[in-house]
Image 1 (cartoon, rainbow, N blue to C red):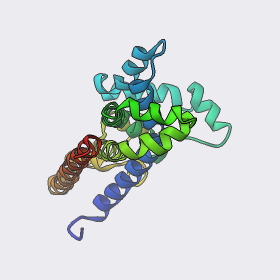
Image 2 (image 1 turned 180 degrees about the horizontal axis):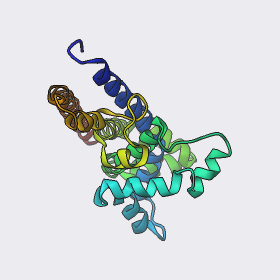
Image 3 (image 1 turned 180 degrees about the vertical axis):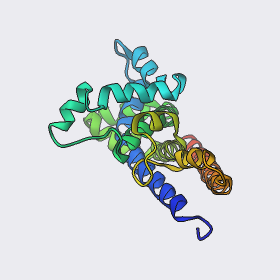
Length: 230
């Protein structure tokens, strides 16, 4: 990484930090929502499915604006969090929140497909032996869907690395604080002579994205082979 300048390295480090926490924090919720959509039948299921996938349909700027209205210092949740000394608007934590929300649909979809590939009879067999539902999930379902969970996490991480619209709307583009890799590319393109730095960051983005896609594809194939027993 010696060919990257200090500002470029800072943007890359911040992007890795934001993406890591965005993926780590949303992963438990992703598993729960994916399992609910794959296995449960309840009123509002289609509404939940629509809400989960809404960030894929809405313009990212709209999502960022909704986050600003909700988690900004004047927003309902923003004011509540501020009473506990927690501020996410215009902070790197807000960038992680925006990135996590934008990446959530991809994570849920990958995990849901993995759960749906598992024969429900295997879970039912565990339940007939007197095991509780959480125990069956932990000992039967989770080991079988683990490659799918990993694949979903990889996709979410890659999506979070590339998130721009919602992030810049919610937390702005503050160097060293909220300027992630995509925001840095945008900033470099706005100044004379910044094209070379922007190009280097574009190359880094392509390498990370392609690596994540290939790794996710490989893990997905392993997941399918594991479930089929081949």
